[in-house]
Length: 457
Ligand code: NAP
Image 1 (cartoon, rainbow, N blue to C red):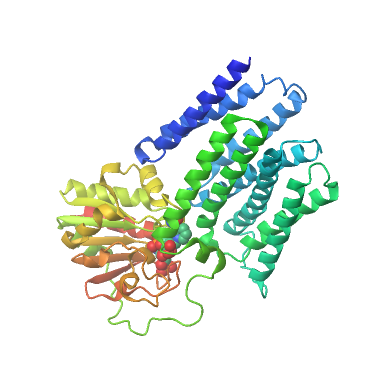
Image 2: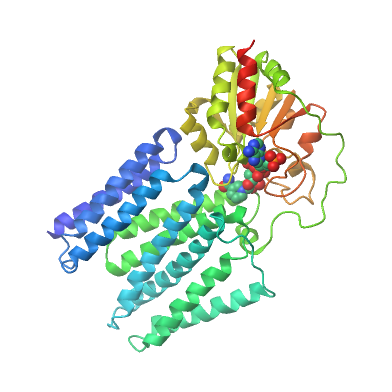
């Protein structure tokens, strides 16, 4: 029996790793999810033959049926734009589960090796912060909490709370079985409150970075509790999630050129004063029929999708438009900025959903040189990721963020509804350039108008 359990955990761990590897490319990501899912089902099923899991089987099955049912239903109906909050809540559940395991272990007051006790307390700390912090992240992204709460000396209060929580945790970890139930309760409560206070001031649009960080923390907490339980599948799954989450957090912070400390502890974007005095030129509107003519007779068109395309759900129309252009022998490419939209891979997923082939979707590094040879850069609901000020103005909040060189194209067409700023809240110099024209309107509506106009040729 032991061999079956250990063998199954080993196979599950291998499946997790294969799954994660496949998730790194859009072409294989769907398969990767299935591989990892099979691993998870195997690890879950084999737990039932574990000699220690012989009580409460009915309760466990009931809990699995209810939570599995909710997950199935919510996973089916969630919109792509709501994916970040879905991930936030699942992260939180993972962290909460790890904390619950730690609570069960610690509340037994049984003597255990020092390393195990330290791991249990550390997992409890991280898991609880992750649980309450993710719940706040979910509430913010879902619009349940609309304000960013700042209190005076917030950072000092947070620091004090964190130090107190860690100190109490250290005492619990090092005191053998001497800790009281009250100390344990207080420890979990402090960690819970810290998670809330840490996340409350962070702006909604920064949440994806925070969620990714919480994702890494979930992995760490699960890995630590896996060690406590002596469960290798949990350890490996936790380590894999922790490593992937850490890399993703770093990638996002790098793509926004903001250290993670800046995301966690600073307000982002302009507040009151703007830095737009040096803007030259004016905004010049254009009609869809003129844009259609410009693109229909072009050799190369590069499409830059952004957050506005996601909000408008315009990806299907844009792909239909791209297909019409390709039929006219126009070379159409999609340029994806690593943080276009509101979560990593946001644009890739939407374009994949619309059926855009992967071989015409390019990352920033692959396509940036090509803008100079494009007749048209069609910017759809993107703003910050094409703002040249990131290259030129050291005072700008997005200075240093790598951007797509749309401004280098012969003509730039920008689809957006009006003068709305992007996530950073600053003006975009690209919109005022001589070679830029603004096609004002909802991205989906403008997509339809461009399609009709091209069909009329
Ligand atoms: P953005 O800078 O937020 O700009 C989006 C633009 O879309 C707005 O200027 C808005 O202008 C327009 N828009 C909104 N709804 C629209 C609609 N229905 N139809 C047409 N246009 C619409 O977007 P982005 O260029 O994709 O940049 C992403 C930003 O998010 C970056 O600053 C990035 O750092 C940040 N961020 C991204 C991530 C990530 O992981 N992807 C994570 C955290 C932060 P109008 O209101 O005038 O229409």
